[in-house]
Length: 261
Image (cartoon, rainbow, N blue to C red):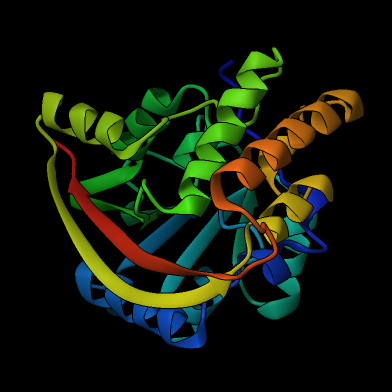
């Protein structure tokens, strides 16, 4: 399972379903600039640039960004936002760029989609100049929160159904941190934004039914219906009314990693 996942089918709705609150987006842009030492002459490569929702605000701040993505439809959306963007179609396992060509590599919710995520990190090391940094953006959630428990049950239900989801790469943060530690890569975690929003569990289940999330794309209709029926029954037994909004606390993190040279 070494291939990466393409988001062709999501190009039309990606921004509407993955957007950050304005304050969190601005805080993330500032954190990448500050933690990455972004300045004139510093080059940044975003692997999995998608529609440019992270890269375009950086380019608006004057950052020299190269965006890489498998999906031409996603890149077309990015191009519509910033016509002068430097965009490249390619896979994070085989980036069509020369050795030591960039100062920073940025990955936002990417490594769980790449089966050979270790190979992708080795590619990062090839691309970085001496002293360069990898920046990984992730969201840290409370594993005991109802929505987190609902997602965990969904993952377990798909496995029980014998259907593989797209979460084929690095499974959790502990796995990545063990890799970095074992390879002598220096790592610092920074919380850059936090916010709370109301979300009903049923909203997330409805999104699964509409196949908004990549974890549904390799399930056939019958398997998805079976999994969602199980999920709805389990969620109602655990949490009661699934349409009741619950406070969902978000914490946006940036891992700054310096590979061993």
